[in-house]
Amino acid sequence: MVQQSRPSPQSSGPTGGFSGKRVRSGQGNGSKAAAIPPPSPSRGLAPHGARERRSYAAIDLGTNNCRLLIAKPSADGFIVVDAFSRIVRLGEGLASTGRISDAAIDRAIAALSVCADKLRRRHVTLARSVATEACRRASNGTDFIQRVYRETGIALDIISAQEEARLAVLGCHALLEPGNGPALIFDIGGGSTELVLVDSNGSAGAPRIVDWVSAPWGVVSLTESEAFDHGDRDARLAAYDRMRARVSEAFAPLARRLPQGAEDIRLLGTSGTVTTLASVHLNLPRYDRQVIDGLIVPCESMRSISERLSTMTLMERQKLPCIGTERADLVVAGCAILEAILDIWPAERLGVADRGIREGILRGLMDRDGRVM
Image (cartoon, rainbow, N blue to C red):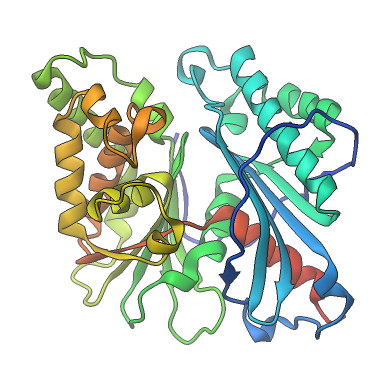
């Protein structure tokens, strides 16, 4: 079911957190410190002081990935002090069963246990943990959330599609190309894709959300919608065309409301799909966030890469360095979604963001915690 609205989604759900229970721990992926541009000065952040010694955390449990970001405020935004990301495929099989599988639950809890251990070791004082489309759709989503809390101490908040869109915009809008034309920001997830039309004119902070849509097609749900012979080239191409058609149909209501013939339109994407395709565009031997985050890529190049990947066999995609075995089966669905977006918003260039919901959560936490009352 496509969710959409013309008003700006401003409301936020309850804050998830961390109870500090003793949990299992495991090996995680750290990250280099990275400066993130600050929220608007008009938001009333407190001056340097005790707040800057606090650690804040954001967890985003999506349909495909579990991601954590821990940061401390700084003079120019915030500094990431720890991070973690793991593919858990929480929504695997959800389309056919309506439930989160036992195997997916185990994978997610194992990843969240790593997150809980990092929260403890980094002495996090304020956190928000969110779950998205898989938990919204699953009949056992609430039971899963309760089990996560019992076993890890992490209180996940199942957020609405509106809140997901708002957080994504808040987290990545700083990477929009300068300009006066309308801008579209999108987030291709595992279970859904959010498109958000924004107006950034006359605002030093987050842009105003003009219109938005959340389509129930992400890289996992769309991949599972198509069963075909991966060894048959004609079958692969036919399946790709059907995936594009499914997504286009879901985007159609918003497409009819988008400004037509506007000049200087801008496009910004935050997702594993766009960062992966940008890496392929640059022929990187391995993924490099410092190179990709903020990159501007010609849209025709992204189309060309998408079309090429759609013709390749699974094994051929697995051999590409920045795709590998973990993304090879899902990246084609991401390509179909991206092409459907380019069909309705024919920008010349695409901005690439390796930031989104987690950064949006952190901005919100620090803004609220530092507000002068």
